[in-house]
Image (cartoon, rainbow, N blue to C red):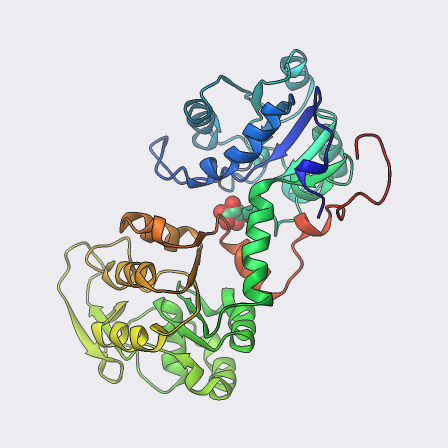
Length: 397
Ligand code: 3PG
């Protein structure tokens, strides 16, 4: 794909789509990974003498203004990280935005308000895409985490301005692409999270391309039921049991499920819990984490892996002490002599909270986007970008 390096940006206004969809608690950003990840592209553009107009979505405000989802905290964090002022706008598009951007000079940075305050964003409404495109002369997509969304700021604008990929998007595609093309083998994947139904496509695909796949989290409960176990009051998806039965058989011993589980009767911090083998889950209990025998068995199989991709927590990791399995996996991966790639907000948070982030080879900023990419789906935000080098010779292309 055409790179930001291939664009003529000096003295121009560049609209940069970033993914600043960061976790907030009471207006405070609890993890700024996604903001930091966009800095190389922003800094490069500023050094090249561009005026940078950043834009992003935050949460799912469904086309309306939601005060708690304003991007002001992101603008302040950006100012700290860049060491220069960021002009934070309180609207997404329109005459007032155009007026406030009119005197934005090369080397200056502005941030539009949350794109999803406007209904045209998720609808990829042509009029909204046009209004965004009017704000700049060039477009750079660095929002890997949103590249699977065919939204106006991801697709519509790229169709209307000379467009290219930013450094973050390039790096994500390179690392995840290498997993599909030439992974160091054995190649293992570990999936967790709540629903099989969300990940059925990626499970099937990973079973084709990986040497092994381990599944934990509530997803595993559905598969345990398909294997004939009773899971008590554990969360599972009854309608997925029959279909799972069919592909579980074909997967054979390349698919690892938990051998034991931590169960509790009450899902609360500090609630009493115990470890039981999967064939002895009490009727009144629910599974909330993988047990030590599971971790030991998985570590033995994954110990010789050349590559491991991990997405999704192995238990209800936000409620202590049910974080243990997820955290133990993060620490185990950090110690492996393998290419390790972690994607998805919860797994990335676990990696950070265990303090092992610098020993993971690649922390993807994409959750859904990384899974769709590995599944082999074309990401609309990538598909729309022109190939490099530029085939057509429009101004500045
Ligand atoms: C993410 O957090 O995965 C991306 O920012 C996309 O957000 P979305 O799932 O609300 O489109």
